[in-house]
Length: 221
Image: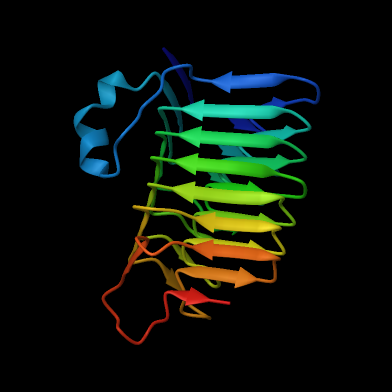
């Protein structure tokens, strides 16, 4: 069991350098898509990253290495640069059974995740709640190889563009079955999902977009 909390750093609180494979939490949380399940079983979570502050960079940063996050809670972190949670570039990211919520500051890009060039990211059975950013309330991806989202929940995230996700010039954006986007707002473009360029975009039939305001388009391309 591990917890990274209440740390303040000028740069990143946690940084993974090149040439290594890092596993954040070997515990695997599987099969949940409702945040209620997570709150009732919090004691089973083995990794918690919360209430950390980066003054000039990101809470967690990785480049040229692989990162796997399984069954972790990332909450109430604060940063003034691109992402309060994780910034990744030139690497592979796998997130499974994670809960990312209650981002503590209006960041520039990506409330919880900012994915840069040459990133292959797969997100499964995870939730992103109450994220806040100028672009991509929960996730910002630009120039990434691929972003695959499956069986995940995006709820009450806010941004100027891309209330939940902003994806720009990704080779593949694939949003798969049983994912739910609910009450995410892009204040300028009105979308939960903002797609700017990219070669291959797939949004499967059983992906749900829910919002109270019927006039807001869930997806902007």
